[in-house]
Image 1 (tube, rainbow, N blue to C red):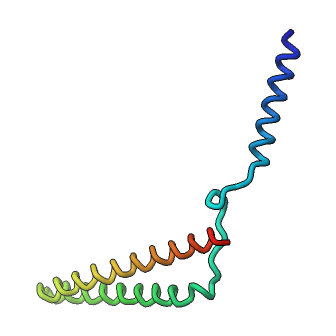
Image 2 (cartoon, rainbow, N blue to C red):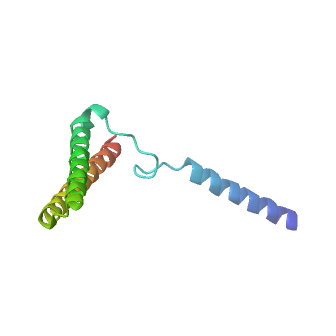
Image 3 (cartoon, rainbow, N blue to C red):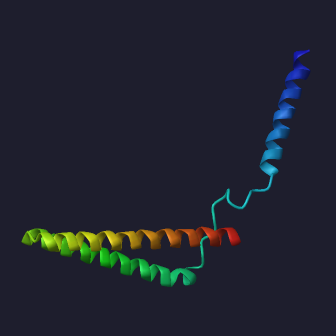
Length: 105
């Protein structure tokens, strides 16, 4: 009596596993296809420019702190915050563009 039940349980498990493995993969589930690098070249150049601005702002802020110039420190901090926000926004936009490209393919 137990042998047919055990065999039936194994057959059901094997059928379920086969059905799950044979099911189609949804577009967003698997690893995505990267966007064409030639399409993202201008965005990458923009990211490099943003990164250089942030680096220059940090150097300017360090110089202002070294000189103990409160007005220059406040101005450098505001510029640094604005440039970092632009850099992060550009990075997010590029990431969204890459994920959108992978779903199109």
